Amino acid sequence: MSELKQTVPQDAAIRERIRLAAAEYVQEAGLNPPLSLNLLTRHAEKMLVGLDLKGRGFDHYCMIELNNALWCSYFPHIARKQRLLLLPFCLRKQPECPAAHDDLGLICRGCGRCSIPRLSDEAESLDMPVLVAESSSAVADWVEQGEIQAVVGASCLDSLEKSFPAMLRSAVPGIAVPLLRDGCRDTAFDPEDLNRALAVPQDTVLYEFSYGTARSRIDALFTPEGVSKFIPDNLLKEESVRALSAHGKHYRPKITAGCWGALTASVPDLPDYLEPVALAVECFHKASLIHDDIEDDDAERYGEPTCHVRLGLPAALNLGDYLIGLGYRLFCSESVPHEMRAALCEEASLAHCELALGQAKEFEALRQPVFTIEECLDIHRLKTAPAFRVALYAAAIAAGRFDGLRGLFHAFSDKLGVAYQLYDDLEDTEDNPASAVDVLMRSNGWDRETARAETVRLYQEQREDIYELLEQVGDVPLKIFLYRLAGKVLKDV
Image 1 (tube, one colour):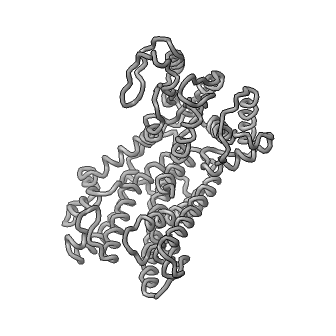
Image 2 (cartoon, rainbow, N blue to C red):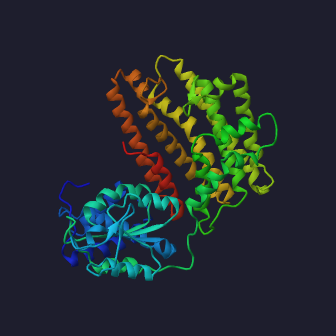
Image 3 (cartoon, rainbow, N blue to C red):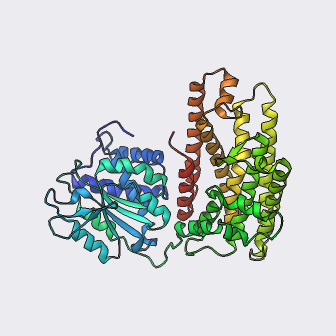
């Protein structure tokens, strides 16, 4: 980001030049939404140089117009009833405004003293919901929950700068209309900009899949009642149900469900056969946790005694083995189409081999006085990436698109797995001989602060590699999903 004072061009002709140039730049460069903040920054700088406007404080405004141009081609595929018009508090007439407000925003009384009633009426005539609020901080959550799928937002440049990183990280389809002045008083915007955003048409082919619906299905599945339907009555059923439903966010099954939805975006709901597939993914994950706790001799997980502490070592090993077998059995359930079963089992078996190899390498490395950071990162990849990969692979196989996506998902999972583990290493509050921080301290003779700084650098390097990788993705719903998945893992450090 530039240190120059950022502003919205007051000359309408300059704003129009930037808007038209952004649309042309996106088309000529073949860019698809979303883009990371770093990539938007680089493209905006290049565009401003070409317009001979560099150094005038228009960098952030240019980034906004580039982002608008990116999403304009996607907006027609979203139903207007799922596009939110977000208006700022500062458009109201102060201090005469008689409206009250609640936790969501302003409860407009339509007194006609400001432009809010007119704009609201115009949006509602297009079947678009309207919210007048002080902050857009909750918008990303609403999009993720499926309540809305896109946003048209008017706001001052300062507020847009603050919300931009979170909106980009959550891949929120959005068209921003910057207010011409900051300061929350005497604000105004170019009505043509807002009219243009509201007038984006609605095509007949809509992206109907809702991630909120997928999450609700998965949450309902991972209850004792939901899980029990898929487990035979036997001596291990009670402990299996407990292991699968009692704890955790069931993140990997949600990856499978969400990725399937992105790959079949015009289908509004999950097919029934995806439930045993998602449950199998969780079986493998929970089995790996049981075995990992044994290997690391951990006494607690989720704030409770680990399985081997509670049941004893032999019973815990047996339960983990049963969950692995159950996962393969679920992949071959009667409801799962026959042509998918072999591929699901093959990819899960390869992942199991990788996980075991990663643990074996860690055992070997810990027996050495010193092992390198390269070895550490390879262990991180082997122990963490396969779980992400199986979740994504299962979705692609179930959607009938595996052959075209295997390479992308493999590379993405490797990078994401390493980044995930590096972030976990940075969160460690105690010495951990297998963490990147401790490995760097031992192998280089560094103090903890220096080793942490290098771990941060390695983490950020993985993060940038992931976003560069996602530029290969031309399928916008899939790219949105992968951005959101990456955004969950790739915290700002």
